[in-house]
Image (cartoon, rainbow, N blue to C red; front, side):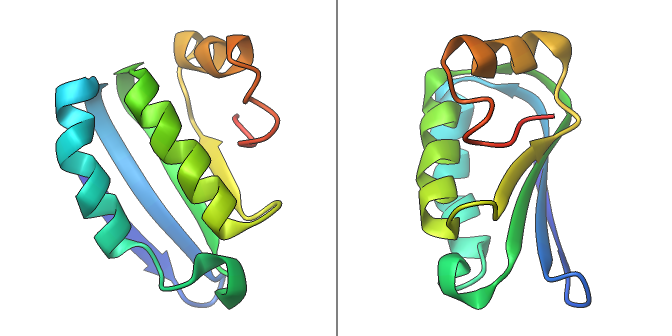
Amino acid sequence: MVTFNYSPEGKEFTATFAGRLDTMAVQKLSEIVQVNLPESPGTSGDKIIFDLKDVEYISSSFIRICVSIAKQAGTGKFSIVHSQPLIKKTFKISGLDELLNVS
């Protein structure tokens, strides 16, 4: 459901998600993601990337996690990549597509 990868040379932390990120799945993922994030992402200079290539659905709970982590990381240090058109539209409708750097 989620895998983590850290690239020290690029200072990039990538979390790759798969499947449906509905409320039940996100409740389990929330703690896992927080535990695996770099310590103090906003001060370490690390970029945090959420790869949603294999995600078919997101709930508002997942959006809440994204906003929380984006705030911790700081301006320009968080992005969401490879999102499906419907998921990209969900972020756009919520007005968070630019804040979260969704592509």
